[in-house]
Each structure stands twice: as structure tokens, then as C-alpha cells.
Image 1 (cartoon, rainbow, N blue to C red):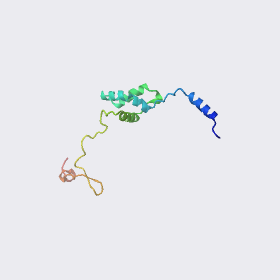
Image 2: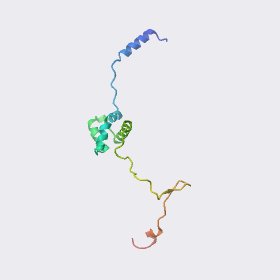
Image 3: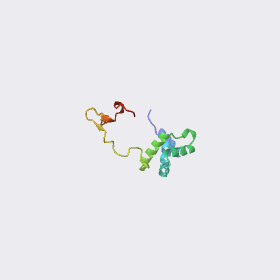
Image 4: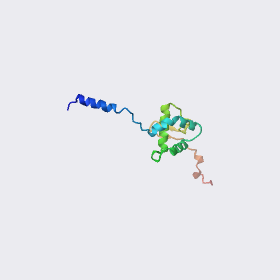
Length: 128
């Protein structure tokens, strides 16, 4: 079937009737991204993510509640997109790795220094 000018006129009329824009649905990620400045400020004031998530869930309908792990993911993503630095470190390690542990190049197993045999109470036969 070949397109005719009549089809073109109908298509243009249909597009003109779409003059009003539909309201975009706000996703949970967009919701958190729009609040990231306030969330970041509350975190700087000392509130935990759990407390902030609970407070936000009180304002949301039952079908739109935020899961804690999902909330953390949305906050991390929104903070990166906004260029904000984290208020706290996500990892617990502060210093370098333990220098006593060595990785052997042969099998990739860790080699831990042997304990002093005098510290083994089982072989001494005395009371503990």
C-alpha cells in the first residue's frame, strides 16, 4: 500500500492534537536524585541512611516504599551524578594490609609466619 497525501494530512493532524505533554512518571531513582542535596545535608548532620530511609518511607504510599539496600544504591548513584563526595567511608579498612602475610609466587597461597613452639600449651603438660 502506497502512502498518499491524505495519510500525511491525517498524521500531521494527529501530531498537532498531541500539543499537551504527558506528565513523566517519577521513578524512585529520580525521587532520590531530586532529594540528594537534602539527604547529603542530613548525613553531614549525623543522621544515618537507615534513619533517612525510614523518614522518607513515612511520606511515601504503601506500594512505593523504599528498600534499604535499594535506597543506598540510589543515593550512591545520585551522589556520583551530582559530583558530591561521600560523607563517610564505605569501607572499614583504614591502613595498609598486614605486613606479616606474604603471598608465595608458586601457588598464590598465603604464607603465615609459624608460631613459637614454646607457646603451644598442649606439649608442655602443665596447667593452663
